Length: 115
Length: 113
Image (cartoon, rainbow over all chains, first blue to last red; front, top):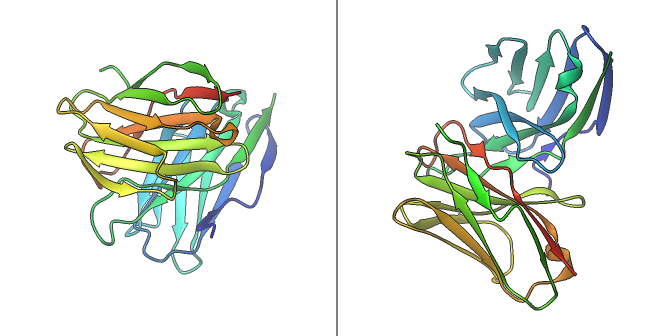
């Protein structure tokens, strides 16, 4: 049962353009969502997060949008840079039933930013 | 502030052996979680510890176990290794359980032959 889905395994964009990475979820009890960036053989690096009570959160070039009715979130990177090339994971968490740090991860999207 | 550290970084074992991996969280963080990353299954939650107590456990066999010490350092153990246990094992730390952000270590790459 894949509760968090990233349907695009890969995405290629030109440097300077916008990158949009998408994520869908099925569990309506998720209350917090996070995006991580990962290089091979390294641990994920935290990028940005959003609480379920918000619909948008911005941090520099990164913006996350949450559409609760559609159970969909997206990460926008503007402008995209070659150094952004990595695998991006969305992750979700629910504190229903008790505070927890257990994250459910999507399968990841490989972003390639072409110079 | 130093990040999450994991030791060893690389490990080669043979089937049937056991292995112990270590994780030191960010100073002041009391919650530690473990994840397994494989090409086929992606990132999967193993277990979570807070104040030396296991708070949550993922869907893994009993061969996978862990513990947390009073200084918040954590270890995970895998007994009777199988080929399918080859993976990147990641540790993440957070200030509290249910806290907003978790920070990951670089991982331990385990290869079972």
